[in-house]
Length: 365
Ligand code: APR
Ligand code: ZN
Picture 1 (tube, protein in one colour):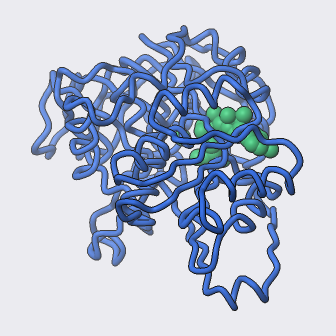
Picture 2 (cartoon, rainbow, N blue to C red):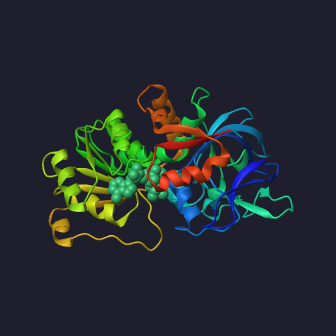
Picture 3 (tube, protein in one colour):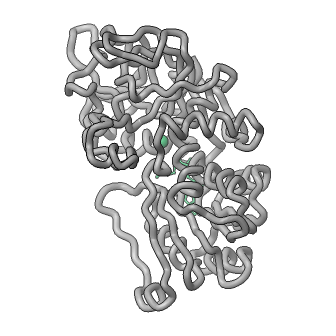
């Protein structure tokens, strides 16, 4: 099977022809139909996050179950699935509390199967890991059954793929982490796949004003299209903060989301808050990065900062929910996609992402 592999973090993607094992106990083989290109893949590619190599990139994918291993119940060949990049062990304390995004027993963090071994190999037999245990930038993948969540056949492959990362991350940050109430004023910094999903989530929540911020004009257009009520073109930090506060009305947005992962915009996300306001940090930074804020007004004004990983996703419940909302026309996920590309175009897509160009690029197979 063809797959987009990096030898190690910091090196460019190469398309390799790999060998894939049959699914073992508790695993399924999925033929990938679509894989989004997410900024987290770029973090690994560029070495912001060091990961063991060689590794197949991609963690935002959908496909069709091709084979099920021994002991798998509830999944059958032919079923359409979206893949979660943080499959739950279902046994640890977090899983039992229903907080699967905090699972401590998932092998996803090791980029292997549950038993610590790899199902993909080079022609010489050596192992190739799969990013977050799913490695979706490949024609096929063998994953733990809990990573493959059935979604309706009528959901387009690229929509299913995006539900697997940016949609769950952004929509979930609004609905699950922040629990934004109807009528609240919301601001969003960064309008990639994640930030635009925050905009869609804010619309679903019935937010009052929705202020979308980016330094690229095209992104502002798309945010308006998805239901943002105001847009701010990011310039100097102080000017941007002032413009966001004015656009949000009152003293600033009740909820401000950061969907980039830069200290400079994290600072702004906290700075725009009125008393009682909540900052929700969604964007992931390179390791070791710090952010800062002035403490007195923060405490005096009873402000809050929340971290939101994967939009608090419980994939088995939330993926079908988001798919259903999409089919009802209430989550226009298809409008995040601006191009379908081939596996060989991944490096080009990374280049565009570094420059902030275009919307979500999705590899289709
Ligand atoms: N001010 C405003 N907008 C900015 C700035 C800035 N200083 N710098 C970058 N942006 C915008 C870009 O123009 C782009 O539209 O932020 C957006 C980031 O989008 P993507 O690169 O497409 O990233 P995305 O895949 O949405 O992920 C965002 O979430 O899951 C994490 O690792 C992921 O940290 C990343 C973040
Ligand atoms: Zn992602």
